[in-house]
Image (cartoon, helix red, strand yellow):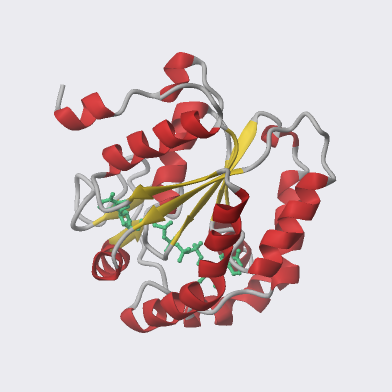
Length: 240
Ligand code: AP5
């Protein structure tokens, strides 16, 4: 067993359920990667607004048409469109045991909408807890430009830190990997602007509410998962 794998004991082994979890952090910080790992460990769904929007673009829906130009430029999609999308996803039965929100909320307007939506939900649903994954900007750019994604199973690869076994091909599906159209240096600069001006206040918002932890996202993927799971247990009063 390596020291990294020793650091990460799946929390599911202890029958722990984290309830609703919010993953916050800058573009390329590892939210999607960690959401996929937590989903595997806890058996609760990942709700990624970026993935839902990209799926709408691929299906050429009205929402997809409205979002595509903005996303390619690295700008945010209007709150009303994203809130409706999240409301409809949260009304599905698979969220009852908890879920991982990835990439939402990213404006104060979205955070306020979500808080109000959850407050109107049944009282027995556990309150939302938020984890901010912190990574420095130079590393973010390297992660963004090196990212490749399987269009079928959505597995996230990286040519530097998590390459597929065969270059350009998904290990699971055998399909050609894709490079996101907003994973360019230019779009990254815009996404960072939106993050610093609109999303940073969301982090402040949840930090003030108290059910919040920050983890060092500059570590290995496995160490980040271990740090997140340990934070979740603390936030839910389940030891550690
Ligand atoms: P979205 O898809 O949410 O993109 P994002 O927030 O910019 O985040 P990313 O998906 O780029 O990064 P990530 O943090 O998930 O990192 P990942 O795990 O892939 O949004 C895209 C666009 O959609 C937005 O710009 C906006 O237009 C629109 N949108 C979405 N939600 C919206 C909302 N709520 N409101 C309005 N508009 C919205 O990791 C990145 C890379 O690093 C991968 O290659 C991975 O393998 C690698 N990596 C991960 N962890 C590590 C590690 N520990 N060490 C080394 N490499 C690592």
